[in-house]
Length: 337
Picture 1 (tube, rainbow, N blue to C red):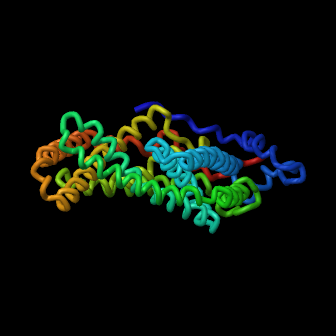
Picture 2: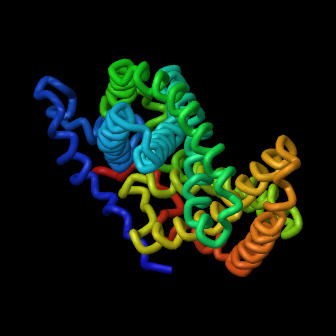
Picture 3: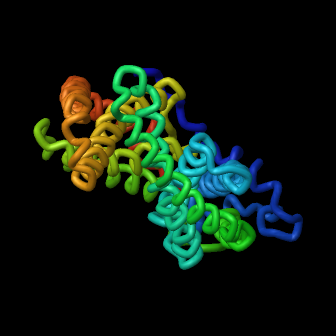
């Protein structure tokens, strides 16, 4: 595992520097650090609010670019890019929502989740189609299967295209700006701001606990148990990479290892989805079942091998959390002399 990035020093002067960007008429120009300390808020937690706001801004720009790419084409790369950036934006909003629940946060998440779902089926078909493309030479009998997936892809592209073209980026941007105003305004949501860092760490811990709980139920003979771990793990991983620097977050090396861990489970799911599609296809066309029997056995053998490979590294999960850089307690304000 790689080294972790150390958290930013909890020096109130750092927060004061960030707060200096507020308008001159604001309380920041009148010694706001002392005021918020008296009210029970550490400058460190104020700094976390700024970092979360900046993170949302940066991720929204990437998401917006990905959506505009999908409006031009719904290729496999464009769809994958949009779904990844959508998940990352949702993860940032989930972190904030766990600490500062608001209607704006919940309203912003809904269209993002709908977009994720709208592109999900298309992404599955595109992954299956790409997988079969590499099999055509060794298994020419899957040609009919590949053609059928192409038909399904075009149908799903038409429906997804309508959804993407109607997705209201402007409305989402305004909702995010309202959330960011609360994060940057030192006098907004004081009770939540007082424990902002601890709330974020607790939310990430809860996401990780859910992964561990599901991992205890894994059975090599039931790939659905691996998929349940994968869905929970994806949420945790995106939350971990969204942690503000002041709280602490994984290094790029560890993020790469975490991504590989997720990919090991994703490979199993990709084979299983393709196997299920093959089963449904042969049920509708029993006349070709015999010609696809060999390929079906190939998929079963591949799934068995991938499950074995994942089980060999499953315990690596416990090295991903807690991060060494996450402090035990970060909500206490400093004492001013």
